[in-house]
Length: 292
Image (cartoon, rainbow, N blue to C red):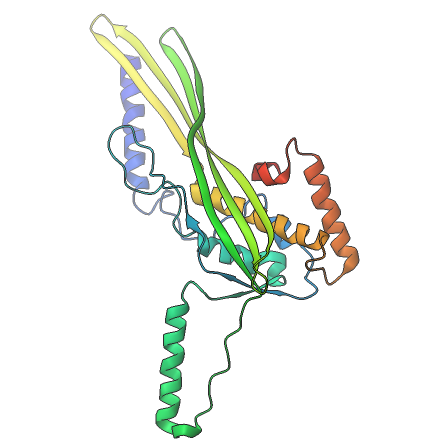
């Protein structure tokens, strides 16, 4: 009876603590910025470009057609983010601490053109035909094509468990895989300057523990606890995009498509990239971002 009382007290305290955390407790966290991935530092620390590249992103869409996996009912939510183009623009703007690309707005181009028309009409209303025109929009020398081309679920699954004298623990895991393709296209010639495919695994882990005991002939004690951790798919997409942009910059410098402002720092960056690629079991184009 003493064990049963202690177990009930423990269970009650857990339930009460759960009720408290749903308010302004530890589960209520303030908003924060997106966490850096293992590739973010590589991209941000790149030396400045000799001349920033004017670049445009019209769309970078989900080409997988995959919905969230669900065994219980039909799930019509997408498996991956539909805002990959916004992530790509953010990554391009951060490359080399903003010293590599001048990203021009193209996804919201209709809104931009309408606002310019409003400004021009207002100027003409007050100044007549003498109204000065707006400066021309910046055009891009390079556009980015591609998108999220694959999302593989249950790429590998497994687990393990053990139980002794009614006390047991078990764990399960699952890995998914997201793949993106990024192409840099010259606007003047239409030539594909570079095409890169990168992948990133998404891990899901479940850990559970349980206790099943006969306290008395007609009394049973049963306790369960556990947790689940899932890697956010949008961070996996971001890291795959970061690796693709990082690779595009370095390979472009190797091919003299563009260059670094400081040649010595540029050679050091290229050497770092080559050393990391040499340490991989597969080429960088097909390697997981977590390994670089």
